Length: 271
Image (cartoon, rainbow, N blue to C red):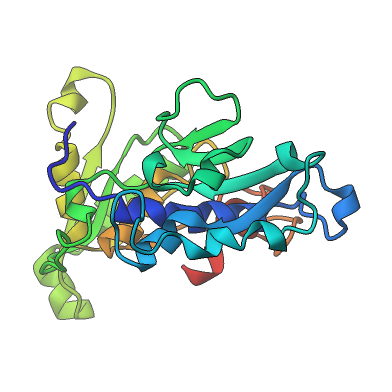
């Protein structure tokens, strides 16, 4: 879908998320002799953005990139193919010396069939979340949840929110607890009865921007769900389930005994 006010600015911030993912990886080593891959923590597109975005960065010229290779102690002809470079904006705005590298993480498959180009999807595509388009709206929804209750945890979360809304209607909540706001629950599914009632993607985004709390139950992988990231960008507070695990910090947002949050989310402690 064409987004008329789509902006590459937020896509550049994806470099930070990817770098934090690498830093949270349990396979990180301190001795370079043990390393199989070297991650270069130079945010090329962010460097371009700091001088305001102009295609190909002719103004700022990514001056830091010109001094970059002198600082890469372990970079050379024999190890060049083992260095991963970050550049998650449009490819044409990357410095040529970065474009020419063997391993490059970029946004979208815009560089043909290059075997070392690792494309990642755009971090944010919704028009309401683009720079300049977002305006903090009046929040009149207490809880917002749109999901398929296909696990015991998800089913129970949906059931409890529904019971809370029935037991304490909005007027009653104001009197007894001093809190206001509606409870919006949408059941997603592939059957026609669910598809007919499910709001559009734009309507879901708008409702999240109007919400105070957005429950974000675990998905099928430990890295969280897109719902978690959308809630943060929408200004809605994500509500997660904390499980005990014997790994790392001892806290997992995925499942009992699952990987800890610092291994799966790049900015867990800032949430």
